[in-house]
Image (tube, rainbow, N blue to C red; front, side, top):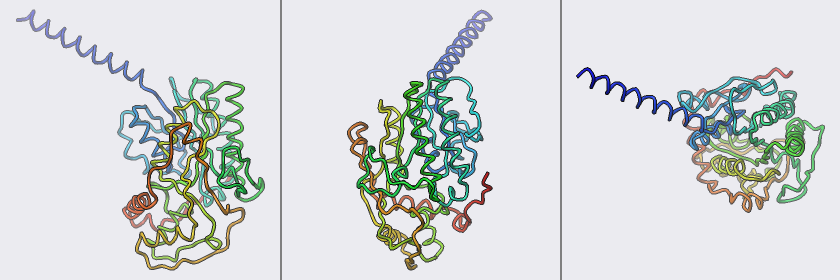
Length: 353
């Protein structure tokens, strides 16, 4: 009996050893990705997607505009870790790293007009640090550029070859030029250091986890409707935007990262709508009886924004799938489910340095 017990113990120990070895091998073979700006609107959705795809996700954010609430549901996930860090400072990650998604940046005028220096620094120093990390780790990096690189475009729709109509010293320039510099240094690292780089130009995107008070059209309209305030449209409302639902954007990002294309790719919904018509759609959706009021158009506000997504279709096999009515309903349901205090929360106060 004693011999049998010893044999069973040996067999059990061997089984546990094999199980532990298999777990270690799985961990070693698991792809690891760093996502900067991970507590933001887009970054948090990217964390969800890459965990779903089997990656180990390292989320990084300094929380200047991000919110831990966006990633709270992931904190206990064994394939997720959060690092509170400012990417304009040196980035140190232990072990191997397969991919980097650089999405850290204020993205709303209400933010970057208050913190212009930080906005420029995250586009310049932050991108430089991420590229240096990619070079050191042999990782592939995708950087989040924007349709703002086209400025107030004179060509419609905008192709990736269009160089834009920009004002480098206007109030919006801190964001636009930070992203243009980001693209330049990314291509330089690709050309001279042979880093595997990808550049996405993101057009207007919406969905759950946007901030109601971030100043962009959709959350502003819904927030005003929920609070019973008149809905503000700037200018005469004839300026157009094309709105892409966040799930579609995330799919495009995922496909671009895994592609072999190093040059910029537009990702957005080419279906344009005027801001006046968009405000009326939101009014109808919310059932609100507030009025639409018109205010002076901000300086350098683009009159028209529409992506040419030919490259996305041909190279990535991507195009937006979610209809605006469906996406708006999902977004409205999210905002409506927020605590009442979120509806009246004022925009963050910043110290620019």
